[in-house]
Amino acid sequence: MTHHNASPAQSKADSDDSANIAVTVTNLTKQFGRFAALRKVTASFEGPKLYAILGDNGAGKTTLLRVLAGLVRPTAGEVSVLGEKNPRAACHRFGYMAHPSLLYDELSGLENLRYFAHLYEVKDPRRCEQVIAAVGLDPKLERAVGQYSQGMRQRMSLARALLHDPELLLLDEPFSNVDIRSAREMVKLLAAMRDGGKTVFVVTHQASLLDGAADEFVWMQNGQIVNRTPDRSFMETA
Amino acid sequence: MSGDLNPTSGVALVTLAKDIRLEWRSKDAINSMLFFALLVVVVFSFSFDPNAEESRLIAGGLIWVAFLFAAVVALNQTWARELRNHVLDAYRVSPAPANSLFLAKAIGNFIFVALLETLMTPLFIVFYKLRALGPSWQLIPIAAFGTWALVVNGTFFAAMSLRTRSREIMLPLLLFPISIPALLSMVEATTAILTGDSNPRFWIVLLATYDVVFTTACLALFPRVLEAE
Image (cartoon, chains in turn red, purple):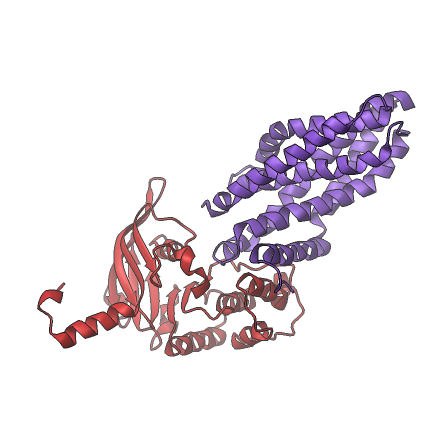
């Protein structure tokens, strides 16, 4: 760190950067028995930006997201999410989408969202319909979510994560089983959210979808962040 | 809908409404409970074939054991639907209070088991030729306190055994020993009313005390259970 000799202008720029830090992890370690899913990960992520988290299966991407969401407690190290040391304290400010849908199969999409709107104390009665329409689904669809195609379920799951208009989005495999056109629409929506001031983390195996949209590609391997690049050229040379 | 209520009761009410709607559509818990309880009534009545006097002595035990076993079926279903698609994680990352979920589940189970008891009691009366010699209205507080005793602990232990591999086995292993004082009170109080030999008041007070103690303990501990990975 060079703060001691920094010019006033540099100091102001640094302080502006730190004010925009959405997520910081310091020496973050998560052990599942003998298996270390995360190994002393240290990184900070500014907002508003769109981050693509990439890596092979077992690299630690999902565990990192679950730690940030407060679903998994770190074995060691520290996490700061939107300035809160305990992610639970920031839970009304982030949205989380997991690989499973996190939706009740027996309820329609609108019924599911109305239930979750109560949990987040969303006051606007039209908000559920708005987010369903925003992800390209019909709010009037009465079919139970269990009868949706996998792609529709993914989009409804994204709608659930967006419901309370969070500042930070943690999305695990949002494009899996989604057709290419719908996936591109989802990317446009996420980029628009980033442009609107939100920070978006996307764990994905379909990195090419985020070309031109992601601000940074974060490459994970064996529980560590091994590279952060503005494009995917690293992947091609790796 | 829940705007005028505090967050805990407001979220508990919408969660309860959601659970009743899910049960109405799937009928998972009610169907399996009814089928199980019906089997117990029929098999026991053929096995023992008691006269009216013997029935009064054994019916209290039979009824409550049947309801306890049937309730376990519903209790396992309660959390199973939260595990499908990992919906419980969506609740865990939300700002909703943990105890709202617990209260909604416990009250939902109380409604389902009370419904089962309402449907099965006439069958017990017919199959075992029952007629109470004591004040039969006192069966109502016994049923209410007894059912709550079963479901409050059952809901808690079902949540505790959620992440174990053989949770269907774990629940009875945890629930039955801790339910013994409540079960004893229910059986003794019911038998006292059916035979008219003694006053069930002591057992009813014991049941109410049991309910207060265990409801408080479950509410105090449930947030930790929900937070567990």
